[in-house]
Length: 322
Image 1 (cartoon, one colour):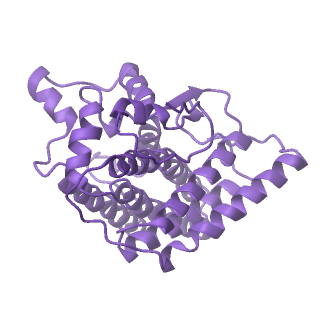
Image 2 (cartoon, helix red, strand yellow):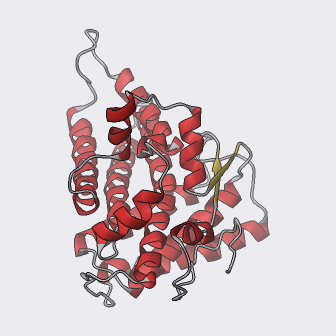
């Protein structure tokens, strides 16, 4: 059996060795190294000339492939009833790659909320408009990545029999450190503009409406994923809590989530490492989609726009440590 170590190569070989189990397939998937905090690790330290050149090359390849998504000519429908090894491998690959993308997408949404707070504090209407727009684009792309993660067929059968059945008990997306970072920044923003009675957020009306509508798009896309994979709409966490009572998210849960999704954490991830792997990941996702997809045109546009905005944010040299 081929073994894959914790590398930044996001490609997964597809073959027809029927003896390979789901655990073996998951074991072949790559690992991702991310900050312990869940926040993007932007530092003030300078990159070397060689590092800048390397990142520029990866960035241009990332943008070149992602810009083809909304006009992708290589599109096929995927409905099928048979489940062979190639279909199962594709399911695992896309499910993992989409979740890898969430780590970056949610971290950068959190960074956007943090920067919105700063623009409001500094009375910077132009900056506010820019960061509001970026936040909305990233909420929509987060949902689009979720749809990409189930772009395999037969969706429900592969997800339930092969992927969900391999998950730890009670596994939940709320156990993602980047999602918690996002919510921390969101709470800070709402806290700044909460009225004295504590009942309503007084964030400027247009800004509040934009953010709520964009997040609603994400939740609608999430609902579509649940309907396709788990029509009864009961999550593993809900299953667990029905049997054992409520489960508060703690460090143990964060570690379980990271380990299952092949994420290693370190407080010392530098900006070069973070960007290099992000660009490689987005290139891999775009290339995979261009190979075959059943995603709708709107979803592909959301992905293209989201990758473009994430690259735009990550490429800026003036970002503060989040």
